[in-house]
Amino acid sequence: MQLKSLLLGLATTFGAAPAFAQQTIETIGEPVQRGTGFQPAATELARDLQWLDGMILIIITAIVLLVTGLLAYCIVRYNSKSNPTPRSFTHNTPVEIAWTVGPILILVFIGAFSLPVLFKQQEIPEADVTIKVTGYQWYWGYDYVGEDLSFDGNMIGSPFTGGDNRMSPEVEDQLIEAGYKKEDFLLATDTAVVVPVGETVVMQVTGADVIHSWTIPAFGVKQDAVPGRLAELWFTPEKEGVYFGQCSELCGLAHAYMPITVKVVSKEAYDAWLTASRDDGGYVDVRTVLTN
Figure (cartoon, rainbow, N blue to C red):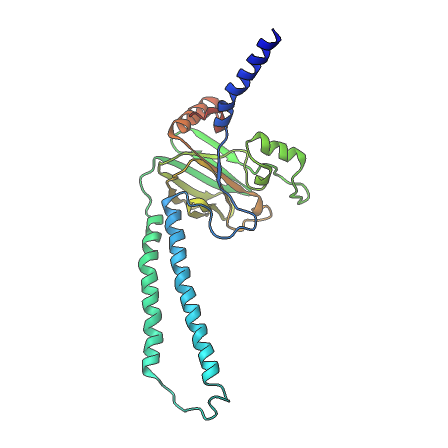
């Protein structure tokens, strides 16, 4: 009898493991301690921006090396010891043409690649999912347009008392319970924007009090939330996972404590989450509806 109970318990434990694993969403877009460079690109927009940044870095590096080389040459060749009797002249037409035309050509070359990237960001495509996001002091409000679903996103652990931003044991428990790591403190929110992978998401961005800025680095998007104005950004996430962002416009005392969390899930999980949230009358943790 005891052996039977033991086997039944083991079967139950291992049988529940896949279901538990389904509730875990990989964190992809997050800052790294002492990291440099970009977060992994999760959209076409982010890849374009990162490629453009790399190309411009090469051009700027070449310019710096050229100018540094010319300065070093002039210091060595035309110092008072090497050139005790300097020549006297006021113009050098070929040099003046070169330093005028050269920068123009460089700027035209950069513009030929950067303007299409800018236009791609600003030309809003037809949306599969439209979400209105409103910045408040100091949290974000989300309204799924046409879906009768609205909720607020506050940082887990806020508000602070006395300006203390240290993580207490209670806050650590809240993070773990919500499916985050303790290292996600100051990044994770109590609710998250949930979107389907591979579909076009349009965010309508505005502010309720002062100027905020909605930003997800891994998506390559950033848009100021200006009171009285409705701006738009778009992205098409390519990989399921958790992505973190932050208000990127100084907006007051707790500006540093209004992060953004976006969870990208499969279309099936998104539809199930949306139905469950509407039936429940508010936000439902997407982990409860994740499927294989």
